[in-house]
Image (spheres, rainbow, N blue to C red):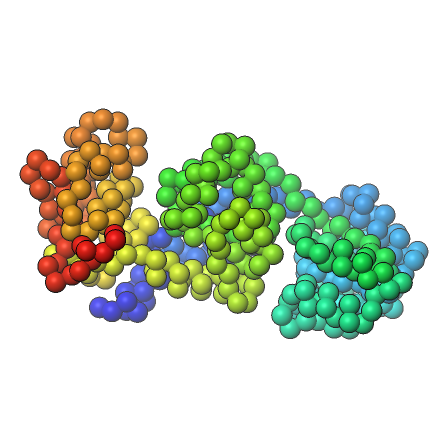
Length: 383
């Protein structure tokens, strides 16, 4: 069975565990991942608080009604709808829509365009790239000196956007429709951090910069930041929906992957390519074995393996064909203490889970080794 057939049978993400930090659209992202075979650990790193009762949004709305801006930039569909709904709640909805009909209205992407049109408005322009950088380029090319520009803020940092407009001579008004706060229950975030540090995750997805910053901040509070950075550096893939989302991670030296199109679907497709590509495939005892996060493919058959067994298998696969001493395997077992009998127990369960006992050989009085096929040169690689 070739790799494509294996993936069609089990899903390309079978055997991998993916952490999801999103607060908004987390169910949608989780479902996309699970349909492709992944196990999902959801831990919203933030909660979004609508500002319907917020004095800042009310003040910005009143200012726009009293002093109509030249340009309004709508950045997210949920934010734009929330703004119109909040204005309706204050009895200002019609006045706001009337003002927005008379301005240069820019919509960042098709979803925002849909929200603008649902409100009975028409955007003047929308970038094909859904990029705020393209919106900024257009405004600066038009010239912004002396113009009033209102931007519907969406909780994400807009690096250099407001500063560039102000440097060009514009008056900029922010319209804060919702804000990010830490989650009310920090427990899931702590569980995700523990799983990442212990290599219980193969990837963590990020769909907003504040969520990435929040996760790093919580790791620092718990004294886990160095361990988290080490996990991202070697074993856990940081997958971001786009470059702005990646900024807090990159500031800590974390390498990230991003799809070409900044959408959930392409993000999941990217994981479907990256994670199987990172999994090690070895020819062992006449079988083709691929070691994944919490399972192993043996000749295309998916074999779930308990966490202790995966720890042993990872230790063995780092030096395929070489004997790994019991003491080294004991250190690889999480919380095993000093009793080498724990290695024998975990090894017996691992062999049972693999369904092919001869994959792992016992070397009397020395330890264990993967029975790498003689023709393979993997043993002489750097493992």
